[in-house]
Amino acid sequence: MNLKRIAAGAGFLMVAVFAGAAHAETVWKQMTVIEESGRGTTTVINLNKKSNSAGKMTVWHEPVVNESGTQIGTSNGFCITTLPGKLSECRWTLSLTDGTIALASTEAAKGTSPAAIVGGTGIYIGVTGEAAVTPNADKTWTIQMKMKN
Image (tube, rainbow, N blue to C red; front, top):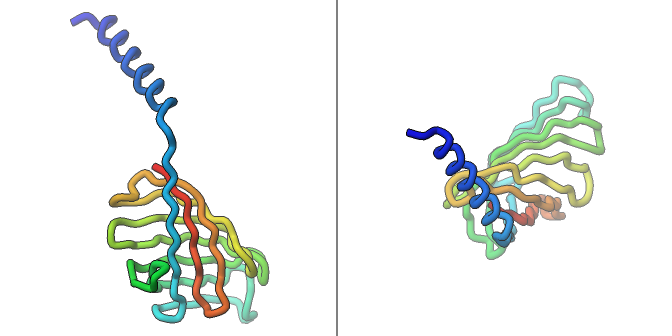
């Protein structure tokens, strides 16, 4: 075998693949889900006697519904308070009927916070993107996602 020919062929193939990828159109998928706090399990772990202190951890397993109110999965995750009354660092996974979506964020105590979509499984394998996470008056959370893979 001629190694120079193999290397040249592999280089050509890589250029062709990257050139094709450069012309491929990115398709963004949008999805909105609602996490129903209070219908699952939420545990607060706080080793400090103050009610809201740095290091306080909230861990949850809650149902997730679509905009029609049909349950489509669960949300499992945790937040650690980093700046009491203002910010928490959060990681969670939406376990849906057709795969999972992993998210990470620094969440504000009030208002909508941005989150990164960092991966997934099933039909969401390789997904990335961003989400807007909004607390609602009825103790639910609306998660509006914009994803691509």
